[in-house]
Image (cartoon, rainbow, N blue to C red; front, side, top):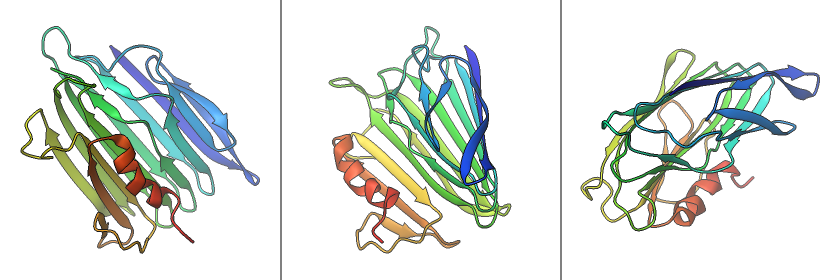
Length: 225
C-alpha cells in the first residue's frame, strides 16, 4: 500500500486555519480542535511493504497540535518486506508545531522504518515526541529503525538514529522507548534531560510501561512556568 497525507496550517487573524487537510487510508487527518488535528487509521498497519508519507506545514504565527486516535501497530508482511513511514514537517518563524502521536508498537516479525525530518525557521517552536513499544502484550518485538532529523535555519539542531529488535542489548529490560525534543530550554533536574548545544532540550526515557515514560516526557510537553 502507498498512502500520503498533507496538513497545512496558516494564521487567520488570531486563529489557525487548516488550509489543506487531506489524506489516504490509513492516514486520515481530522480537525478535532481550534489548533488540533488527529490522524484516524482507516486501515490496519503499517504492514510489511507499505510506503506511507505525511507532510506538515505550519505558517508564520500558526499553531498546530498533531495527535493520533490510537497506537500504530507495525505488522509483518508475507514476504518479510520492510514498511516505511516518512514524516516531513516545516515550521515558519513564529509558528508552533506540537507532535504527540500515540506510540508505535513493533509487533512480532515486523520490519519497519520510521523517518522524521523537521525544518524550522529561526523563531519557530517545536515539541516532538516519539514513542516505541517493543511488541504487543506477551509477544517479542519485531525490527524497527527510527531516524529523526531536526534542522533550524538550515543548520543541524538534533539528530538521532536507533535500531531495535527483540534483543535486550540496546534497551536492556525496558519495553518502552520514548524521546522528546523541544526548542524550549527547560530547566528540570531529572537525569533523563539533556540540554542541546544549539539550544532547546532533549529527554530520553525507558520504561516497562508507557505510563512510566509519559511521567517523564509529559513534564516537557507542559513544563512548569
